[in-house]
Length: 187
Image (cartoon, rainbow, N blue to C red; front, side, top):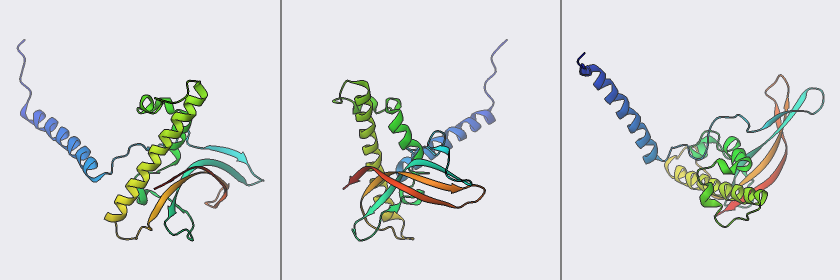
């Protein structure tokens, strides 16, 4: 049976799909809105379930705060608007801390880390977190030049806190019960 040539409509459809796909990726590259090293997928990013009283639950997760240039002003929570990244914290940062060996940059960051497995994991994790926070600072500064409203306060760095939230069950009420500084990156 002789092979039939591909119909012209199918060739056009495939061409359009490939062009759209490549255009979107190129657009993300040019605008700096690509999603590395973060993901919006929340699985395993925090632990929920610790009961705190009769109608409250607590959970902890890593959260990035901006450090304003003016030392008299308090740290502020970094939001997706600030960095151009969906959920710029909880998921990927927890993953970098727990599983640094899963990062594509692992072999590069462990070059002069200790050889003992736990020390090597901690060293790689620290370096990956530092790179990610540096990325957040760079993205924040670029976006602050592009987005004029609301004005972004100038920052001198970021801090990564392990934040403990307490939620009231059945409501949208929550409070920050505690913040423990994990990492600070100033520029």
